[in-house]
Length: 447
Ligand code: TYD
Ligand code: MG
Image (cartoon, rainbow, N blue to C red; front, side, top):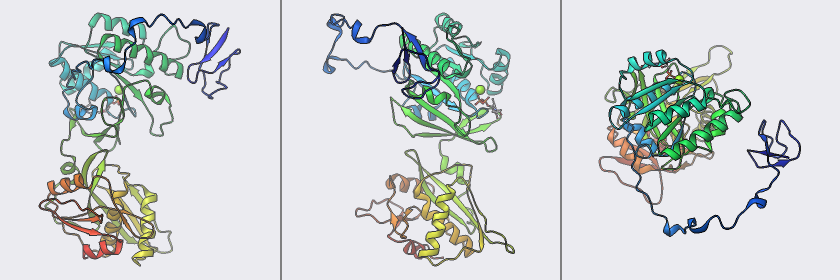
């Protein structure tokens, strides 16, 4: 008798609640006495063994999801046999988005099975009514048992299976409550096997909390082909879908949606959505920056408000949508290299539209916005800036400058302050001002 860790393969003669090999809880399970080396039969491969040159590339027919932004994120649609982990905080809109997709596929390509372990069929219907889902080929099942879900798949033979969520699905033969690490792994492995065998596409919904404290979806991330996460705040209606793993396409892609009374609406031109009317004269403290979300350029508006700290109060430093530590660093760079003193002032920074950008290409924008507010001088609304700022005030290059330039021009920007590089790209209709140090950038902004 032996116990084997399903996580790291550690073998032990005794059962432990926590694997001595990798420290994972509840991962040891009883195995037979044999080791793999005892059961190897060298004849079994026979003619099945092929060299890579003999393997035919089956033509993969991707299935459009009906949501072009989701298709783009996935690398061109759903792959038969692919399993997609769809994570996000509770209430962010996962069920809504998947039901919208389900309806659109059911209207076009074929049957969908939507399994909810959290809501009754009536509740799913209520949501469906809100988003106008009513297809006869969209089957809904309120079920938590893995085996009944698998039986339903055999019966419906869907093109796409949606399991909402893996935390509520359980295999009765496995110990542990639904949502435990062991159950998550068993349930996911069984559904993955079924998906590959049937050549359908499966979405596994996984809840994660803001702190990411619940390790649930993370434990299955390495089992699935694609992992995408829906992010956003419940107070703003913007939702960002982000791919963190994709065996069939690029990762770190994003798609932007807006939650409306009739479900999620794709935003194909996020810059325009976040910026609003670019023809309005700008207020002091506002700066346009072409940032990258994944590989996608988006022109954003950074806003700074600098005001004297009243009395003997401690100066405030507040940020939304930006990394506060990076902003503090930029304030220090301004003190040192621009001789600008902000010690007696409160600084508030935010990103218009509810985006959250963690990218160093915004550095120069932060400095420009703070100065603009401090001097109470507005920038031209045809000017934008981009560049990482180093500790000695040098401006560092940014990734994919060409794409950022194109996006800026698309939004009506005519002048862009950029980091100087040996080979400068060109863009019609855009005057580039290449700078090496932060003071040059400020001179070029001319305020
Ligand atoms: P939901 O899809 O249930 O989130 P999740 O499955 O990620 O937990 O979305 C819940 C929120 O979305 C809820 O607060 C109501 C809101 N909502 C809309 O604003 N419009 C809609 O059309 C729908 C269906 C939901
Ligand atoms: Mg839900």
